[in-house]
Length: 432
Image 1: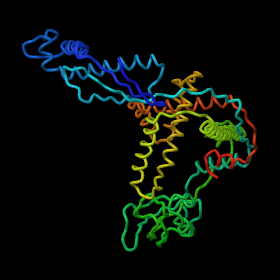
Image 2: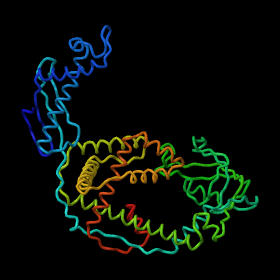
Image 3: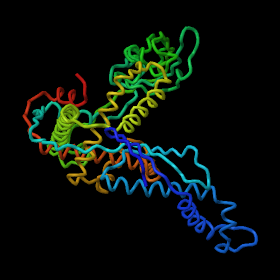
Image 4: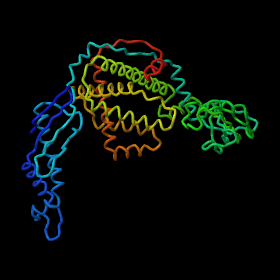
């Protein structure tokens, strides 16, 4: 058992000793298990003498025995103290030799006790908005655009925004063509913003057979560092121009998207938009509640968890900064952000557990389906989660935190604030 302990806030340092006889007895039990499966010349499995097993496997068995006995002592200690570990303890066995008592020390952080949170004393803003029928009509126009047919125009037709230009192009920096800047018969929707700013504007006004140069400047934050901020020239040839012909707005169009009539289609779109408004408002409420919890709730934080969070952020920064144009690492800010994430994670985990928040199988399946819908091949997403239990556990944790936060929202007071739809989405997305 432990003979010394030093406790400072959430950090524990304890030391104990395992007698040589106790350690060898535990190692012999492990060796007996080894012997049931071990194969050695001249012996049947399960009939190898202990003395022979000790000669070959004693060091390995001793290591396992120390782990087993230390864990037994630790488990009893944390049960008696009614504490919970915040991470894997760091063990030190410096100076121990086989045949001697094993003196060891363990250092670890524990999870803090969550103070009582009176959510009803907090008031957060619920932003509301009135459905604008122009949004419904815009959605209908998008449906028509998505079901439009691109018809090839005559050679004297001049390309306009909204048309598709079928082009060849080669990009140059100075007199040298650059990698990735060449394509043949590329279908470019003019006005879509798919290309570098200014490129599509210079294609507008041309017709089939035209050959010309497009001069643009790559954005300073362009993903390819070797091109960022540089002037470029593209040699362009137009093969053909296609005009998008929109289908008529009628019941047949409505039926093509699963609705009985144009009016039913409008009702369906109104329902979707209202759901989007509700979700945008709820995202903003969640963010406001998180700010309150981070600011108002006092909670000691295990340094082990803060260090882990900080180190993960630093590793991600190092990985992404290799592509260039990364913002300078602000050590103080990142440490503070790591503390905030740990604090909120602990609050949501503890409050959610106390209030019996659960992640169901349906919750997981819905989240995986929602993510899979964003990819061309949904099957890859399902296979990823089937094979990667750590990723599935992370997804489960994210869902748990979201459900805990939503459960908290049911206890706070709210005040309505009418806003325009665009303001609602800007605030929900964290933009101004």
